[in-house]
Image 1: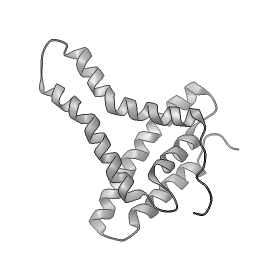
Image 2: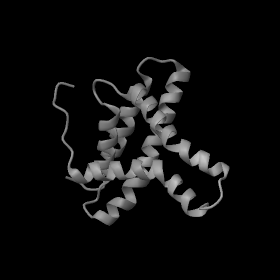
Image 3: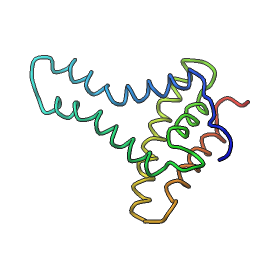
Image 4: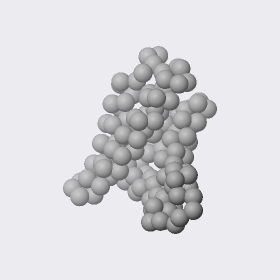
Length: 140
């Protein structure tokens, strides 16, 4: 794409960072609050979880990014598309949709590796982002 990268507003970045912070660190917070005194296998799983999310991010980024649409820009487009203009309503819509988009990107990347079709993951990722953009919450 010859155009410059799009600039996203601060609330879009806030929702994306909040989503990945909650996704990565919520298991640790829940484990600490539930198992204060005892050390259980949940501790190890909750400590490994943020690293697992980072690995999945890197994998999806490597497979789904292209010259036309980088992976992180696609997540920002999905976030911006699901914002309603009202903070609380946006929070309700954005977080589940980002979970769906992130899981979808990982599944697209895995399926693209299984099929071994060049460019499959990048094309499907662009289609997924376009779907959310076409069905955006706030019409401009």
